[in-house]
Image 1 (cartoon, rainbow, N blue to C red):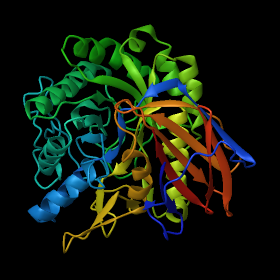
Image 2 (cartoon, rainbow, N blue to C red):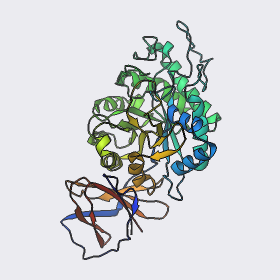
Image 3 (cartoon, rainbow, N blue to C red):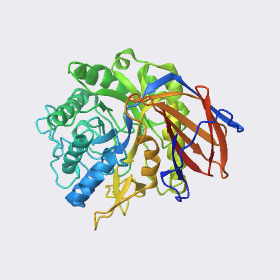
Length: 450
């Protein structure tokens, strides 16, 4: 059995430990039982968002050799690659763009209901959008299995009640135009060589950002938009992207529940997308229990210089996302920015202390791997697309775990987090065999065996 270990103090980062042997007589107070025959959701992958800022740094601040090395490390799987299989794009600007824009901006007082001015290249220059397609296409060339989802932060201002990219909501008379806008984006990306796997209709629809694009979109509005417009339009297409609802925090589970209670919208929604910034992960399980035919995805969670992420990023990400969210039925887990610079940017409003998977030095193009990279690697390097979560018992107060069975070779992958401030010993029992392991204080380990 192979084992990789990381500690919260950074002394060990994905360190390969000595191989372990099975020992049926192994004993310890904490026992984790595994039943690999009892299987749950199949995974599509783990990753982070290719924001405008991430793409701009990769394209504009790295040499061709540096760029090639980084993208192969992030999206490749051999030779210690991170193995990213899932990513997210923004439809128009987010806070991690260089400018605010959408894909169909018009002068004040003018509208474009036929979307004659729609373009993947925004009317204003230097947004970061121009660099996204080259980076995504390069990532797909490295990993053709990469699944790409996309989310808008705002409809074009002319579609909104306040005529601005900030605040406001979608005017009912522009529901059809906004659905056409999203479909047009899907078609344009496909023509550019980037198939879109899934869409949400609004990022964080219950949050009004003070200084970057956003749009309130209630469950009632999303219900009408999806049930009457977007759902029927996508249903007419072959290989249409899936529709995910919500794309917001764990703390307002009534929102996706209200949408799923509507039969017209329910029929078009494949999954509920969740963010990590408020509430508790068990909301995922409660929603899934009411609608077991709907998948779950964790579509955004950023590391950064705030508690607990600043001092406890490794354990927070592994316990809440890679273990908690997946035990709560997530089929994919996304962190936020793929890459940021040494100043936590560039960004146009919003978070000024977020952290990417890697930090790119804007002067030299060199990059460093953050604790978020290390945390994600404990899953993404070892759990391959199609792997299924299998039954495993809770480990106790300070020991959390999740176990997968890879579809291609039948190998088992177990991720364990010890959040205690002391070493913890446990025994794992599976198929009549067992092994014991003592994890250092505040550490994460991945175990792989056939």
